[in-house]
Each structure stands twice: as C-alpha cells, then as structure tokens.
View 1: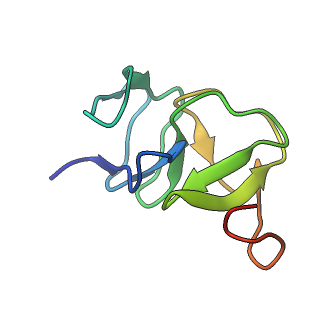
View 2 (view 1 turned 135 degrees about the vertical axis):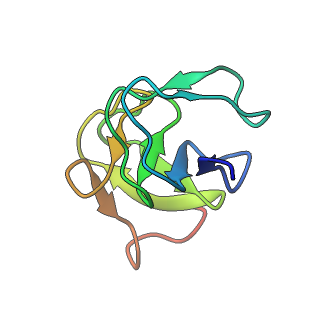
Length: 94
C-alpha cells in the first residue's frame, strides 16, 4: 500500500494513508522532487508538498480546500492549526 496519496497533479498537499514519521521520504512520479516529512503526519491528515505561505491556497482534488493561516514548510502537517476551510467561502476555482 502506498503510504500517501496525491489526488491531482495540481495538488500542493497530499493525504497520509498511514502515519508518516519525521524523516519519511515522500517519493512519487507525481512529485518533481522528494519531500521529507519534518513532522509526524497522522494517518488521514494532509502534508505540504511545497512550502506554503500564510494566505496561500491549499489545493487538494485539484481545487482549493482552504487558505493557509500560517506558513508551512514542505513536509509539514497541514491542519486546523495553519489552515482555514474555504468551504462555502470561495468558488472551486477561486
């Protein structure tokens, strides 16, 4: 089983399908470079595939799922502590 999934080529976050420990190297044909987990990523949670700045859109399913409220480096956890949902606030392409 693959330990993470990237759902669309435009995604800048992946979903962990199992706990990813600190130092886990994410490699995929969908990634231009390897991403090393800088934090433990719990199963089912999102991990940044690139460095994201406060205000950036988090992209999953090829569409924005939220906006970053804090910076997140590639390989770090993306969750409620640094992401606010755009559900009902923006159009899918917005």
